[in-house]
Image (cartoon, rainbow, N blue to C red):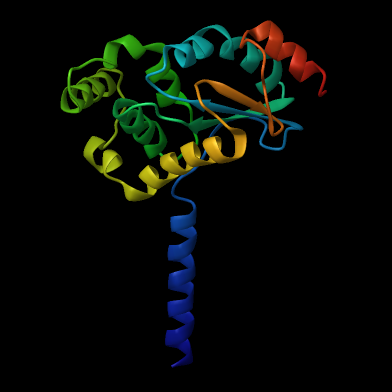
Length: 192
């Protein structure tokens, strides 16, 4: 009897640990960095795509790759297409930003359609053409991922008063200047 209870305990502990690790935050940089940047973004937001094109590469080179800072991407979907794309970006559960970066870099290829069904088809086609192997329906219908994405949005609104995207938080303080690399660099250098 003790053996059965022990085996059940091991089984449930393993199941709980697997469930707790299923959805990982998309993060770039040194996990233990002194500076934490949080970026609340919507995948259909052109300003967010602009951030990834014009600010993120320099930020990555100067602060993330050097171990000075890390950035956590948080979901703040502004529409259902962004919500579904967020679920897809989050679905691989490896914390990697490849899908996220590709979705921003190629936003105009998939952000189109007069209905959510059409937008989903464009997103599916884009992912396939880019070589991303994702079980689209499984990701879109995954309740844990859906809750994860929605909780990011709730957290942004509640704790950081996010009303638009992108909104940058540096060490739990909202970055209030124009989102250029020059402004961001100045703010980060003050924290080193």
